[in-house]
Length: 372
Image 1 (cartoon, rainbow, N blue to C red):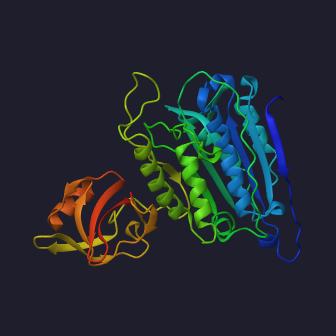
Image 2 (image 1 turned 30 degrees about the vertical axis):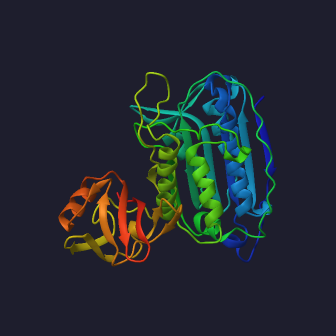
């Protein structure tokens, strides 16, 4: 096979006294499809950089001895096949307590049978890939895909190596996500009916190249690596970052090809993950009452609700809304009273923009990824 395969490290420990904790290994398969049929053109380098970003993120969060990493950068159409990807999965030998991560950046689409990875040699349906991963019996299985449809004529590109200092043990973030959580994670970079987009290519350092979702995900991993965040926090936070980045890069919307419909947002789509909230009950987590003549004042913020992790647009950081702050607009529409706040929250897409006035900080805009 002529695709690029680098087995960066392979480590399986045997510990008779505590096999489930001391011997835990992260098996990571990272796949980037830059084969000629993908026709990435000037964005070929962005796909290659996606792989570098994710492998660097793993290096920042995991000691080398605890990672079995397979990186596949597919450069030939004959190797862009479901069989090759499933063969990589077959080589995983997970022990009790191990975690499995499969990451893919390339083309994806959907038909009546569901979402699939669009490869030169055929379709690899998401459900079939996930079934193969689950059969490896890892304690945690995560399938994360960044599937795009941008088309242009291509050229090859080699992503630069980024040196990082590996930790002596898994960071609190990766320990929580992959070793202290059990179940299946299945996330795609865009929702049904949407395409995934790259950050526009411009002058700048190589680490600014890549897909909007992957750049946001690895940035969040870096920012939160010393905190034991869970998958729900990852989905909410990275989802808001992707939403903001798309609007920053494409304020008038974007299309995958000339003449194609304009897409006005990109929202990540979780098929499932441990702790995924049910689609019922309050959406935002704020309780409000009328503040005559000024808006609707927040009187309570529900613990662990979406309102405790909003993205402050101007400051580009996450924070919690607070009691006594006043909601003055939702999605650009003024909300002079509680009735209007409730109405706009009910009608809002899952990611909502809220304008808030704080007695000390003044007015600010924030994004909330609501419960459902």
